[in-house]
Image (cartoon, rainbow, N blue to C red; front, top):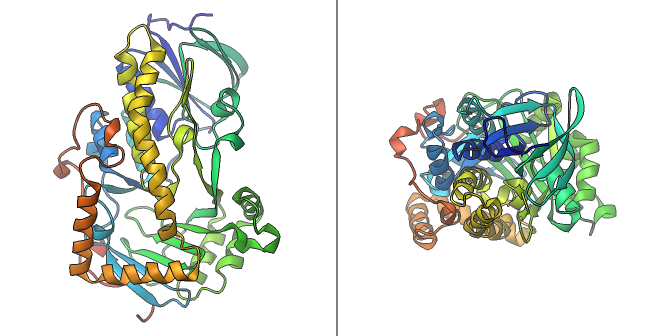
Length: 445
């Protein structure tokens, strides 16, 4: 078996055709590698849930030649409306005050579609194919791949595990997930709703929240509305108090709709219609909120990228950007060390790790804002949002946050070259919700 491809190029296998995997494949191809991508799914996945693409990720997309196809799916003058369990509006914050104005609000499928469309023809993609065994060698990796025609062993010069938070590559090479998974004891359930709840229009972003349980409903442009719920694991019952989130997630996965009705059944306002929509949708995603922390993302000629390596959780707001930057810079570092793949991987990890560590820290700090753990924290959060609802105060808070983050904010240390593209090249969204700033029909203040 030879690792080198027929064209004389070194050969890489990328496991996973998501954002990190496709970015890594394009980057390695650009660096002169022959690349094969294998994907567990039978076909390319579309749609997906709401993500935030930070400026560092947009810069990586620009270097990959796909940023011009991306556009924000929330209106430039959008409003984030907070409501309580009784359905009463408690805050209305301009979306521009709550986020980096240079970031993009997308659905995950937007990124994957852009990367897929720009994929070099020479990058081979094998669907319904998974690695079953990995055998690292001194200067290569032998992989047993099982696809539609059965298992076969192939040799590669590099194996890239970009197969998500429950990475099979990580499990086979680095060890069991339990060694690296750090639970927040929070459960997340997400769904794509069949329609908007009554009274909402494109561009509305509504956040029902109480102590220990929140929901985020995003009515994004030209996409079915997306909702995700996060709640404390112990809300599922005293029998799970003190247990880690994985037990609660397994219980929730067995009956996601019943779980949501149990946890959110006393919410008024939009919630009953949202829960009916989840039941009608039929398909939900259930998991725990957890980070992946490894001392190293590489073992010889095997390297992990994206959530497989450093999952920062949805609370960080950096997952998509880290995936793009990590994948896009991989080939650059490997190419900078011709003849020494492992040195290139070491250089890449050293450049990218500070951003991942910063994202982990940011998620641990912001989790209390996303999911207040008790009534006192919930009241503090509500007060902060009310203050931010007053435009002058909100502008002041935004300015202070900008000064605090400074030029070295998380993620930028991983960029080797390039700057964020001119914002005029990124298409703004014009929706019904962007024509005027008006509250959705949620209830009385």
